[in-house]
Amino acid sequence: MTDLAAAPALVHTFQPPRSPQPGKAPALVLLHGVGGNETSLAGLAARLGGRFALVHVRAPLALASGGYGFFHVRFTPEPVIVPQEAEASRAALIAFLPELVRRYDLDPARVFLLGFSQGAIIGASVALSRPDLVAGLALLSGRILPEAQPHFRSREDLAALNVFVGHGVHDGKLGIHHARASRALLGDLGVDLTYREYDLGHEIGAEEIADLNAWLGDAARLP
Image (cartoon, rainbow, N blue to C red; front, side, top):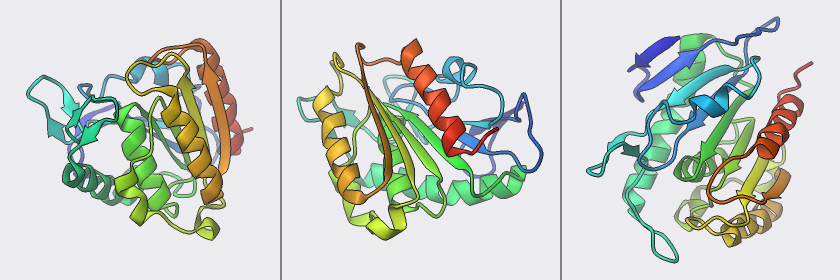
């Protein structure tokens, strides 16, 4: 594992595939929630098979409450964000992805973003605005920012983008209505959508992990 690599610009860890296949490896870029860090999704990643190169990104903003975030947020009934920070993080990830592919010699046609909570939110902002850089998005317990929608590409550009939405129906931080709104918007945008609801709160469970593994294998064309 490459530990806390600082260039490209975002701090991250890199782990090559545990079970590599012939050719360049597909990449799974993991984006943690607010207050987390680049280790937060390591347990999940360990359960997603071994055929992806794993890139754990640390969000760029150090938070006074501890950990890191992609933007500051107040958890009101409809969360209030700092749009300028969200846009800066979107731009940073867009710059990061091609450098990541070059640095680690990854397959540029099989770069997947997997985000939880705020990581899912920023992942959606990136994938829907730059589908040329991203083959698929796993949007777990997140939502889609209205502030990012002016950057989204056309239905024609998004037709090949694979999206998995997973959300707990008992989520008390980002209610299930956010997932259902995302489903409607993603349908309008014309992505290749897989949508799942689970008997969970703001968390990821075993059934969701099994669904993720199946979706990733299909979307990345893994044998």
